[in-house]
Length: 269
DNA sequence: CGAACGACCTGTTCGC
DNA sequence: TGCGAACAGGTCGTTC
Image 1 (cartoon, helix red, strand yellow):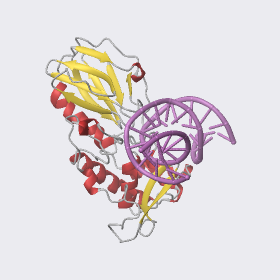
Image 2 (image 1 turned 30 degrees about the vertical axis):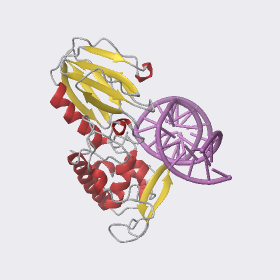
Image 3 (image 1 turned 60 degrees about the horizontal axis):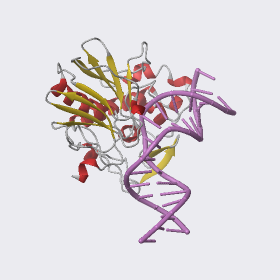
């Protein structure tokens, strides 16, 4: 039992949020909200959804977008340790619960030990990324036009939510390893051809991670408390000092803009 | 304008 | 064994 409630790292990025999104659609689409309980006001000042029905559940980058039948749009961002958990029975007390949405057939718990998660109403004209859907769009042609004005490390560039919506720390390391690019390389020195390699690797990795229902590095769990599978396919993340699975070199861990970054100095240039 | 960094949080891990 | 410091990282605001 404790295992269900015991996690330190979730870090929902695009594949994890997409997983929740798909699972939510199966369960709550067209369902009526019977109650909305805010257990921690820090989550955001929102209320008054009783009687509304769920019109759609979509995703923008790492943000979950829940649209109600009165056109209200709820934006849920899980940040680092936020989770959503579906519970059929309401009696259970779950630690770190931030809010609960009560449906006729069950209850949706938002759980977040570190209280970074946010719930807000859609703001008009909320920021859009240059690559708003990295799964559908080829990155290279668009990004190549702006790389010459930037000097930031390529890893920071990939994680910039104004550039690409949805890539976080885990997948940024994985993508650059797959593309054999040094994460510290300045983005302005990355060629169009290399950007195409990054784009190809990135889209493949994100899609594969979705197919695996996300990465359970320490304890990411899906809507039903199950682990993802992509942690079994990680090539560099959290593999410091272990051999590179491509060239046999040793995986290094450095800091890039304050974030733990894993790469192989032998085959990533 | 872009780049870097602290703040926000709290459970876990590390070092003495 | 115990305690405090360091660490984890998504995003925002501040500073340079």
